[in-house]
Amino acid sequence: MTESYLPQFIIIGAVKAATTWVLEQLQANPAIFMPGPEPHYFSSEFHRGPDYYTSFFEGKAAPGQMLGEKSADYLAHPLAAERMAKMLPQVRLAAQLRNPVERAYSDYKMLYRRGTIKGQPEDYLLSLDNPQPRFLLDGLYADHLSRWFEHFPQDRFNIFLFEDVRARPREVVEQLTLHIGATPFYDEVTARRRANDSSEHFLPLPVRTALAPLKKSVAPLRGTKWFEGVRSLMTKQIDYPPLSADVSARLRDFYAKDVERLGQMIGRDLSHWVTEKKPVMVESVGAA
Image (cartoon, rainbow, N blue to C red; front, side):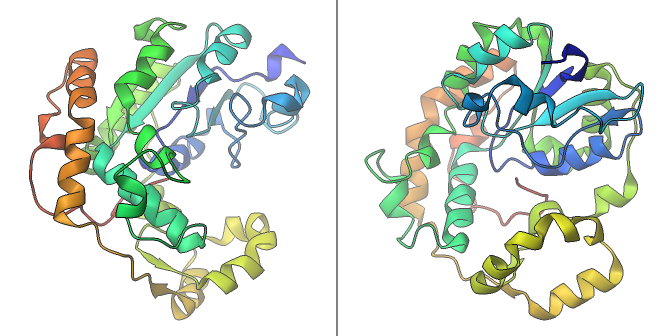
């Protein structure tokens, strides 16, 4: 393992909270290098060893660039914080959080459109006794952050919300960039592009499956006029099973205590996350 090829900062999640949009903003900064694929090293790929991890950076960053990575499953993983603290005790961290009810339904929709699950939202969002307990567990942010705070001082974290990105994208990016120690840079082209196909229009599942091996090859073409034009001819809007008012209310009850704790931890009033309101919104910012 070569220590010079270890990251100085990491975005740890949460899943389905627009972390891909933030990743792309930081990748546009010439002072920063971040790999496109999520390494997932401190979560699911830890068994591969440190040389696997440094391979994401070695020989790929330009001289003098700050190294970072984003793996959105780190926040909720029970061992990621301890593993990371042992290898990267000085790393700076960022966590982007989203209304946990919206996050759970968005996560459900992602696996639904992939064909991983086929049931209704109530089959997965009313009890932990289901094949995808992550839909519920990943949104218990106070529990997860408490675990991270056992291994890193709180001033090591830049914690912001999905709604902050929607309301003040430039400010969020600039504050995050200053937090990790780089010169602020905001890319207008990236800001306008909807990351992670968040328009709710997707290629049909059989087409996505067939094209999966080419995903890395065509990645540089995303956002170009002709590529998006061709893609738009093939995509369609997914007809998701709706999140009922009853399921939404029960989700708010499920998260209420954790949301209260989280608000106290980060010094923000988050009560609107667990009070009755309009139906869950459609994604409009990349919600990786």
